[in-house]
Structures are given as C-alpha cells and as structure tokens.
Amino acid sequence: MEGGGKGSGVVPEAVMEAVKRTTHNMSEFKSQFVEFLSLCDPDVLADLPPLQRAKSLHLLANATTTLFTLRLRCNGIHPDDHAVKSEIERLSLYQDKLERFIDLSKAPVRPSTTLNYQAATRFIEHSLPDLTRDQRQSMRDISKGEGPKMKYLERSVHKKRKCQSSEKQSVRAATQEFLEKAARELLGDNRSGIKGPLQPNTSYEHDQSSATVGDQETPDFEDYEAEFYTWICKEY
Image (spheres, rainbow, N blue to C red):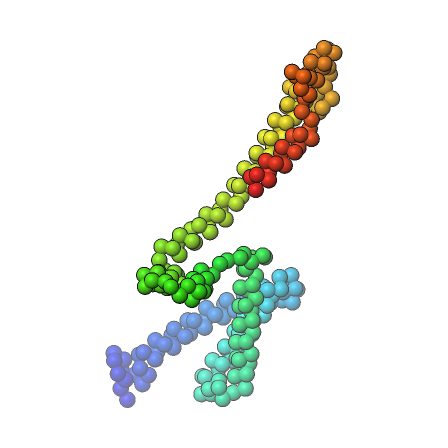
C-alpha cells in the first residue's frame, strides 16, 4: 500500500510529523512536570499563600486529568463517554472560582467611585423632551462614549484627582506660614538663641514700649487664632 505525498510507506508523512511533534511535546512536559511535582510537597505548599496554594493544586489536578483524558483518546475512548467527564466539569467550575478570586486580589482595597456618564446622559435625555435634533444626537454620542464632551469630562475627572494632593500640600504650607508669622509678631525676633516664648528682656523700658503702640494694645494670640479660622473658612 502506497501513501500519498512524498512518503511511500504505510503511514502518511503528515501523521508521522504529528507523532514526532507529540513525542517532543511529551518529553518537554515530562521534564517540567517532574520539576513541578518536587514543589508539590505538603511542607512546601503549607508555606505558600492561600491563593498561590490553590493555583498550584488546581494546576496539578488539571494536568493529571489532561493526561488521563489523552490516554483514553489513545485507546479509542471519548472522554464524554467516561466518568472523567464529571471531573473535567468540576475542574472547570473551580477554575472560574479561582479566576474570580485572582481578580479580587488585584482590585484596590477601597474601590474608587466612578460616574457612569452614559447612564447619566440617557437619564438627562429622557428628562428633557424639548431637545433639538442636534442636541439629541449629541446626547446619544455621549451615551455611546463618543464625542468631545465625553473626553472632556474624563480629562476633568483625571485632572481633579491629580491636583488633590498638591492642594493639600498648599494648604499645609499656607497654614505653617501663617503660624510662623503670628509667632514672630507676638514673640518678636528671637536673637538670643533661646527657643520658645521665654526670652530674656533687655530693658524694662523696652517692655513698656512694646506693650503699647500708639495707645493701642499689642494683639493677643486669640486674635490671630480667630483670624486664622476666618481665613480657613473663607478658603474652604
């Protein structure tokens, strides 16, 4: 019996090439699977995090089931006609659960709040019946995620989140500057090297002159505190 193609044997050349590829893949799998089995020691698995341990056990079960299914096919038995079918379905169910837990592990600890522009645009469109044709078309483009308005809103939200940290730093710097200015005006310039409000007095006349300026008392610290709170309320 002559085969088709270049080969003249009983087995076609395409089948022989497929057998060679399968043999090569099996040899690679054998070397890697033996290395993987060395890592499946119970003591090693106990040191892994729960998610990594679940992934390792699922990979081991999936590889074992795949090898057994391949053995059935080589013996002319379809996996759907064997009891291994229920095991394959069970592994598929566990794989879905494992992927869901992996996605949850990658999610942020506190999910950020986002605005659904498409839903908001559709709500506005149905709430305003007197829109023109161009306005309705513009609203529909926004609800589909198209148009310059949608991109502008996304850039605005991104810019607002980016500037929040710089605004907090500017408020902290302004507060520190205000308190330092109030301390200088209340306590005066401290050139003696002593920190704090207790400073050596040079003369009694200097204390008397600094107590009153033009028949007006020196402002108290409570005045600066009230001014500071007024400034904070005005800014925010």
